Length: 128
Image 1 (cartoon, one colour):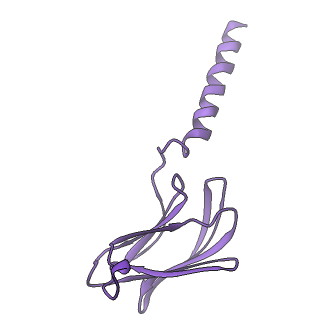
Image 2 (cartoon, one colour):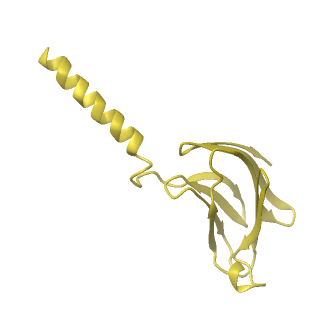
Image 3 (cartoon, one colour):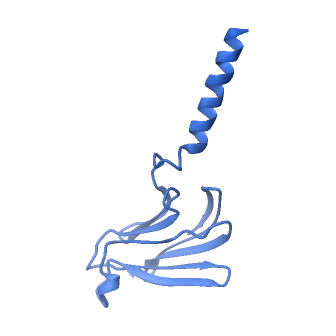
């Protein structure tokens, strides 16, 4: 009987830790897609942000857009035209409880994904 009680407590602790894992900052950003020579797009489920990282800032800008419902965001990372485009890493809010389309790239090199976030879990279908 004592063994069952201990096993139940241990199981409960493991369950609590697994649910708290993304909330306490242990989960690494999840790669959505990579555009070779241009940039990568990741989802930070801890901070609820999309991360756009330019591989060659100042030389090759990572132009990106996010379409979620009636919301549309367009910008770039690692660019040079305006000061807000210059950072090599840009973060945008991750659309919550909704399906969204994210694109990133430069000229003919582009990545596209259709994603849906729900309770700090994300599923994406990458379209090349």
